[in-house]
Each structure stands twice: as C-alpha cells, then as structure tokens.
Length: 324
Image (cartoon, one colour):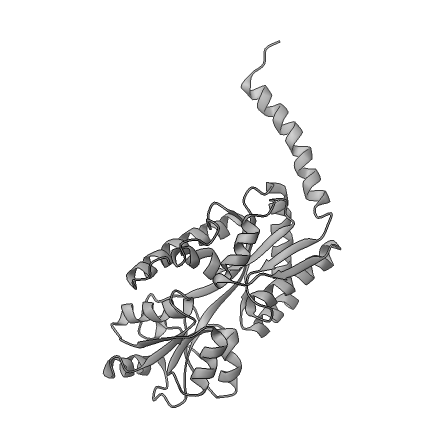
C-alpha cells in the first residue's frame, strides 16, 4: 500500500474537522473568567461587565469579571498570559497594558505579541482635549496660538509618564513646536479634580472621565484626538482639523486570551462578541460611557496591536522614556 503526504494530510483533516466542530458546539461548558486589569468602577471594568453580562445571557454560562489591578494594567494582563489557553480566562485589555507598558516597564510578566491570542476589538474612544474655563481659548486653533505665545507657561496634566494622556500631549508638542509644562498625577480622578479647580490648564483626557463636566459647562471641550469627530460631542472638531494635520490618538479596548487557544474556540468567541457589539443595546451602553462600540476579526485586531506597539515605542523613545 502506497502512503503519500497528501493522503496523510487528508486523513489528518478528516480527524481534525470533527474535533474542531465539536469544540465550537460544546464551548463553553463552565464559567468564563474575564479579567479587567484595572480597579472596579473604571472604564475597563464597566466594558468587561457589559460584555460579560451579554455572554452569560447568550451562552447560559456565567462570565465572571475579576478585577486584578496593578502596574498600570500589567498585573492582570500577566495573569491571563499565564492561564491555560482553554478559552475560560479572557482579558479585556486596552492600549496601555497591551501596546504601551512593555516599553515603560522592564518586566511586565508577558510579551504582548507572543503571549496572547487576539479575539476581537471591542471599543474605541478618542480623547477629549479640555481646558479650564479661565483659559482664554474658545477653540483648538486659539489654544495652539496661546501655547506658542506663552511658551512653557501653559501646563497640562497626565496620569503619569508613559500614559496615553501624557503621550497625546507630547505628540501634540512635537507636531506643533508648542511647549507646555507636564504635571503628572496618580490617576484620572486627581487630574479631573485639578483641572476643575484651575490648578492645571489643559488635559488630553479619556472622554468618559470629563464628558459630564463638559456637559455641565465646568470644562470647555476644544477638540477630539481621533481621526474623525464623534457624535458624543457634537460640533467639536478633531485636533487634525484644527491646525495639526495627521494628528490621531485613540484609546481602544479588546478581548484577548492566552497564546495557543484552539482556533475553533477563538472563532466561536469572535462570532459571539461581534454579534453582541453590533446590538443597539450595547452600542447605547457604550455611548453612555463615552466610548464607541467596535469589532474586528482576530487577524485585524492582531494587526492593530502590532501597529500600535510600534507607534508607541517610537513615541516613547522620542520623549526620552526608558523601561524602568
């Protein structure tokens, strides 16, 4: 009997196909743990709970959110990276721990490319550039002119060196030649209190944090940092439209698992997440949070992660931040 490579491959395919189908049909058979690598009550936690609730409803298996905060999201991310790749431990990871942190911290406990399986992008959110009402700028072009006129005297707040609020402001400085004083804080709540009190002039902030204060007219919104305007703040242009062409900084969140997951389980998770993310209910819940629902294939999400890692590595190097 003559055995060929082709016949072996066909036999392997015949064996693998039922196994793949079985995995798709039976998963999940027990509760799923969704790790949110930031404290309860924050944006990552809320996104994880919305998705977890919808997965629970769809699959009749509990999707339990576990908050594992620490090291700017790296602690919880490392927990998922080291978990069995069986689809029962997932991460709601954002741009910080997935694309930025390994260039800020020497040992995050994981490699963002090698140690995760991308499943789907879930949320995108441009930042909102806001100023204290005492700042004499009615729009972003006026703000840039003001910063250039008072070189080094306008100050901006951030969540600390290497945070996206810090990097957005530094990219703006690089692209315009403007000079501002950096005032780092330990968390978005402290930044918000500082700008509400007039201690700092401007912040490139997560929209969810400052939008209520803009709506209450306690802060003035000048621009959004994404590639296009958002209906969350009608009439507010982008930074790129306001004299800084090419500027784009967008936060994002997505669902990942440990490296080595079965393709069938990844496919089942992706299909269900995409369905959930397209529903009007979830879109509205995310809009109320100040973010936009998004979705992708696993391959598209993986490509985004690689592009973002490269982008932030270059930006961090340009502002002199070395892993510590």
